[in-house]
Length: 339
Image 1 (cartoon, helix red, strand yellow):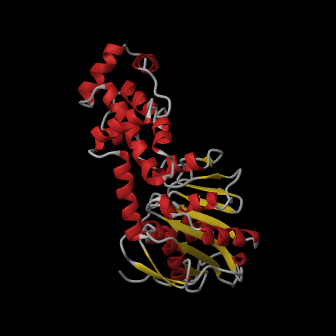
Image 2 (cartoon, one colour):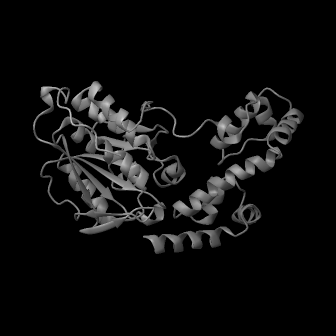
Image 3 (cartoon, one colour):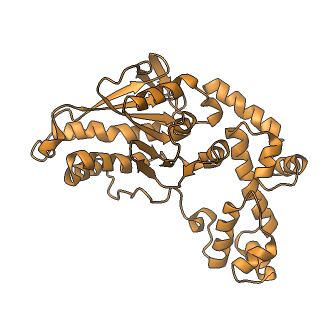
């Protein structure tokens, strides 16, 4: 694919200034390559379309060298920033498992840059590290939905939302995936105007720019392959009540159907009993916590609505074919090999 044709006619308003806006990306080993590309490529394209350097991109790691992405692609990096210089915004990009994100030097670097007045952003799992650094206290933020459970358990007071991206004063957070394209569109529009930002998005065939508060995931209807209103109400409620499961009768009342009809709906539309579906949702949540948090197995059992660690372990083995401790050990070995 050829580079965008340089055009200067509508490169942006005079107020955009001549100095390139410097944007940094602090990469954690195993960062999601798609999320990273979706975040940095719009700024590169903006430079090409404007025919001048609107943005300067810098890439940082814990040390000077190279940082490998989730797919093994390596990005050359500078060491952690010590001085602000001209740095305007610093995004931290993280993927993989939060068990590999205990990185005090990076937390300290984020706090240092925040004190210097640098706008701090997080992409995919990056906001988790921002929270660990104490930079999201009383701030609304988002991150990839896969990490939501571990984040809430680690930071109970967190003001976590399920938006695609969130701008709260000098903090920017984004769910990752292709959502950084939407966030970059907004940032470019703020500096260069909506028409220019539209040209950048069109270059990436990004014709439907998402709003900040658009959902991260497909609807329950798409995820479960059902369209019955009562069943959708119940499935969505199941996902929200993993810690304190509701009874079959309570769910039936919520959906305005009888308990017997509720049973028929699950068998007909899902091929599962009500209890089996609810248990599967709770166990999937437990598996995420097991792999992404340091919580003890007994604590995870409680967070998933099980009466005891033994009950949770028996159900877990039946669902996934291995014990919770064995699954956690396997996940830790994987992190060690890739971290």
